[in-house]
Length: 265
Ligand SMILES: [Zn+2]
Image (cartoon, rainbow, N blue to C red; front, side, top):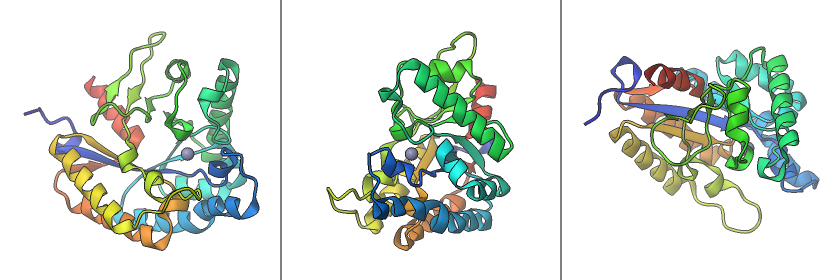
């Protein structure tokens, strides 16, 4: 139906992305209680090394979105991510919602996160994922003006697209979905039951296959503190194996997908 849009004759693309929120996931909810914060620490301390091992064994390069506070608190984690050939993108400072900020504060936090990640990752970040996937009216304009290549926030398509240009610069959108995120199923805040991993994995496999059928991009969003628990890590391993053995799927980092899409546009 549609012409091939992906490199190497691939019919679809797939990205494994990880939001390394650590304690900021809880701090942003006003939580300061030590046990709750320790759930966040599980991400960089316990889960991240195993995730990096899995990606290395599968020869997959992923995209990690890291709040500036987390990068400064866990510089060794950031170095390990970069050392594995993975991309690091911006994800706020302490996971603040940009909808709560005025324009000056939003821009200041964006520039601080660029400065911190550039210093600690050794490369200027080109991608932006907003904490909690909430943008302000200004966010896309700020990204364009500050030279970002892509946003990975919107939920309106199964394929990437270009946002309208601002001051002559345009940002590629690589859409996401709550369906392909682990948080709606596995984040426990004391209010609703944790979902059993098996049915969640089945849903992800079916969604992945469906996105491949229409030639889209399966853009998975995981949180190391959630997906790193052994029962869910087994799901991640199964998902990686399924994606790898599915024919003609381009598994790539989001910065690579954005660069490809911009060449097509
Ligand atoms: Zn986050």
